[in-house]
Image 1 (tube, one colour):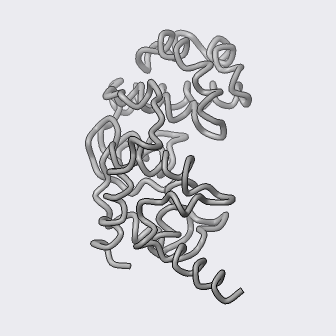
Image 2 (spheres, one colour):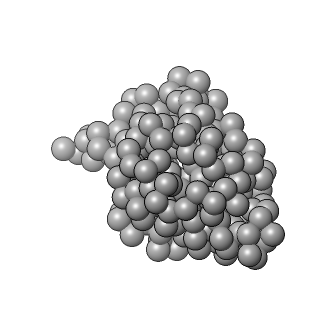
Length: 221
């Protein structure tokens, strides 16, 4: 599927977003540090657990310097509801230290700059760049990978989606915005689920290769 085709399909997802939209406090963040913190909270956990720690973490860590003042031990206690809290605290302090030493305490506002920060991988860098800095970047997490792969490639992304060259090239052609990224994530969580996707509710099903192949398979069964 060409870039124009996938963008048309994704525009239908955005148009239908009010039907399956979820609201989280971190989605309105325009401060790159706070957006980065939120993404670090969400690594390997669900949004409900992240919410349990979110307010206290944001109040205690308004900037990178505050993370060094507070230290790993105190930050770990704030993160205890999330699990893996010691590892998360260590990652936050390490990132804060690097930002202070390399960028004078100012979180980089570009995708490439964010990728230089320890513990910040491709997806986190892209998510922060898109949501807080207004820069389009190839945001590919498990949810985005599933939606793009199904619509454009007609297949599930698989566990090694981060190494899928076709998927990466597709994501790089998309004009990512905050609205588009959040709509796709919510669409993956509510409609285009990993198991038993609700294809009958999908606003992009007429353009979805996965839906078309499933329909043909069911017709032949």
